[in-house]
Structure formats: C-alpha cells, structure tokens
Image (tube, rainbow, N blue to C red; front, side, top):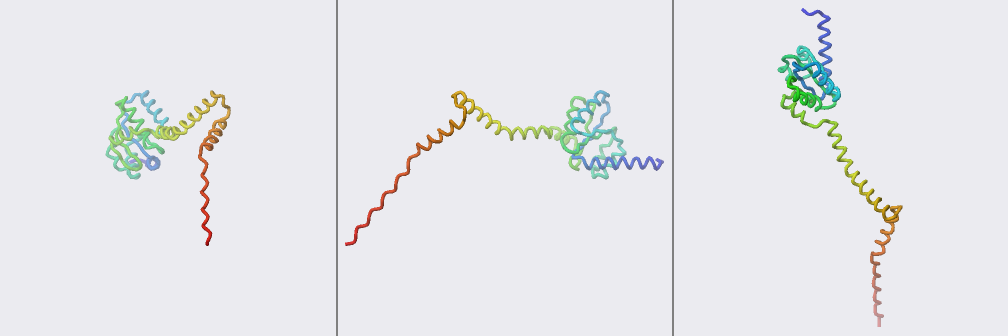
Length: 202
C-alpha cells in the first residue's frame, strides 16, 4: 500500500495537471515510443518555439486529472506511454506541431486531444493541424489592412515623381492652378430676367 507521502505527491501532481488542462485552450495526447533522442530533442524544440508545453505523464495521473477537468473522453485512449502537449493561447499549435512532425516521423502516434474543454478525435486533431497558425493569420490580416494604404502611398509617390520630372517642386503648384482653371470653366450664373412692370391702372 502506498505511503501517505506518496499519495500526497500524486494528489499534488493530479491537481497541477487539472489546473494545466483547465487553463489550456487545446491539447494533444501522443505515443512517443520509437523516437530517438535526437528526434525527441527536435520535437521538444519545435513545440517550445510554438509556445506549447510538452511533458510525459503517467496514465494513472492523467486518468484522475481528465476526470476532474471534465475530459473523461480522453480516458479511453490512455494506453501505452503518453505525452501531453498543451497551449494556453492557441487552439492550433499543439495539433499543428505534432501532426507535422508525425508526417516525417511515423514513430510518433497521435492519440487524440481536446479543444476548449471538448474532447476531439484523431481526425479532428488533424483538421486543426491544417488551420494556419495564429501568427500566420495575424500576418495575413495585417497585410490585407495595409494593402490599400500601400497602394495610396505608391500613387502619391508616382504623382510626386511626375511633378519632379516636370520641374515642379511643390505639389500645390499643380493642384492650385488646376482648381483655378476648373473654377473659370464653370459657366457664370445667368441673371434672372427682370420682372415686367404691371400696366398702370387707367
């Protein structure tokens, strides 16, 4: 029978994992058997760069933690060695890094995962892996926002270059005469005809 100290240590590990699961937007469980030391080191580096926490945890600890965190659906996949990858600020990163790595290293086996408190299957993990990462989406959004500004800047620069070629130093030298010419071309308003005098009463 485990000693009281061992039981307390296990309870502390379970509570720590429960907190981690509750604070994670997404997580993926995988079987890492067969990976070499170099492959494992490379995987951990990629996960670290993506701000993903990755640890190998005993299934007995995960069993109690997922139950307390409301992720009981993960209990059925707790067979063999289990590594857990979680991220607190992105639902895509854990799935993307692990699935991309598994494509080149078939020793890594995806078991399943969860997103925002809901258990997802292996196929769903792969679907999340196909979504562009948050950084890529932000980059694309910023690019689409800056595109019209860039077009305007290029158009203004082209006007300035043409003005410079024409010997005009100030853009107002072009704009002001153009406005004056436009004003001169407008037809003057015709004077309203004078009202006819009414005939004097006889």
